[in-house]
Length: 323
Ligand code: TXA
Ligand code: MG
Image 1 (tube, protein in one colour):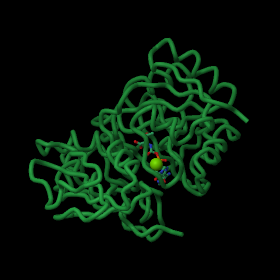
Image 2: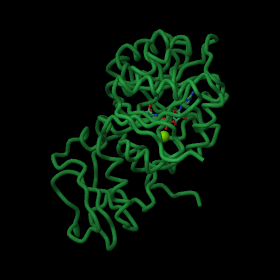
Image 3: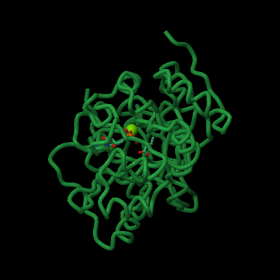
Image 4: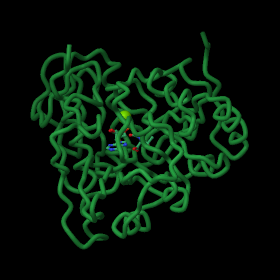
């Protein structure tokens, strides 16, 4: 049994330690602009399998393959004009592009969970520096137990995964705070698999056409499963009152009736700034959950811009749970 994870400040000096762990087939939790990822060498099957084990994640769910350049991305996926346009506009950044797997890919089959496609993302900051120095892509889902709230600080990773990870790079709070937007590019057409850090409007502005939600019958992303991102407390959306023994997730200057009796209150943004709200969302859900409230009342939040991703996550947090 491993004990406590090693934690290092996420700076250039930590990169050599992270590479040593990755070379040995270990797991490194690392900050990205969206959420913390749980990373392994994408070409090492045993290392990738450890990700599924540490998360308790069903292995039919594919992982995002993180790369540090378009050139690296094109070794793993087939990029057409639309995919290149999106990469050019949003990388490095919070956009994952799902494309056909390239023949030259040496990513392990587990990364794509046997699909003929691969999800690629070029993250910002230390994560990209690490991938560049490592020279190979990193498979990395969010660094939380499967179905739970994604981590936006190193403390969240310690709470969720503790000794299941070999090294945690602490880069402070994530700036975006919700996961990447996922698009699928196939036969020149772009569909949305998951709302996230890049707004649908921003995608449409670059492509010059509407982007529809993907309408496949199959669940293509676990983030598309109904119950996901779930705290232990139940979640009640669009609350205009706070009921006994509830905690309050507020937004803006107007508070729901009965706010004085809330077991705990966190305001995502007193000035109704959606970017601030996204960055604070997961930390707030965790803190309200820890208050012991039976339910979290969530004030109305507009669905414009990144509000769409916030509402998507909250709806899944509020969805009926499996036993
Ligand atoms: O911001 C993010 O995307 C974070 C950071 C760490 O990069 N990662 C993240 O990973 O949220 P994860 O595994 O929690 O969610 C990735 C989603 C999953 O829902 C997965 O099913 C989907 O991406 N995905 C990955 N590869 C795919 C593929 N080939 N086809 C369809 N969906 C795919
Ligand atoms: Mg996740």
